[in-house]
Length: 222
Image: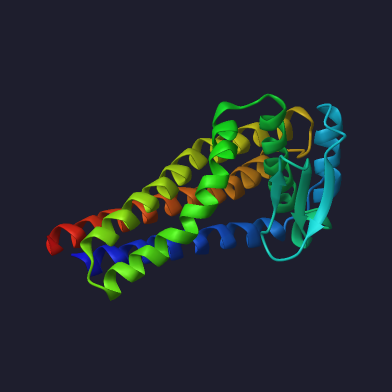
């Protein structure tokens, strides 16, 4: 049972990653009729929402886009920053959605930010404790590892409404600010954001299955 859960969780992660990369690749080949690049999209959204203090930078790596609320920095990968595709517009708008959450003190974002220092520690410690519990055949250590892992799981859970809400805000500004010019472009942008959201759902389900697997192992060792 433990092995089946482990393999199933891997399959979920792989499928989600394939879907998001597939949608991004397809939408990345469709040039937006507005001609806006990811940078220009983000700049337009931020400026029109009174967030001109947010600095837009280019990040390295593929799909490495993020919003840093502490330093007020919005980072866009090269495939987004310099490109004028529907994918670039959708992703840039999504990251601006996080900036809008920050502006209006969105509760789940605030909660996630407050938990981040703790989670950054537990997410690194949990795997070490769990590995040590297997090496020393210690059910006690395994239970401690499960407890610390649960904190990370909760963080993954509250990430879901944060990401869904950011995509919702993104779609709203895409329409209201005419960042795409017809229904076909809008539907393509939505597909990109829906596929991205699926990766966060997959991350939560995978973590939940791993927790179940560890609990099964702990109970079988008692």
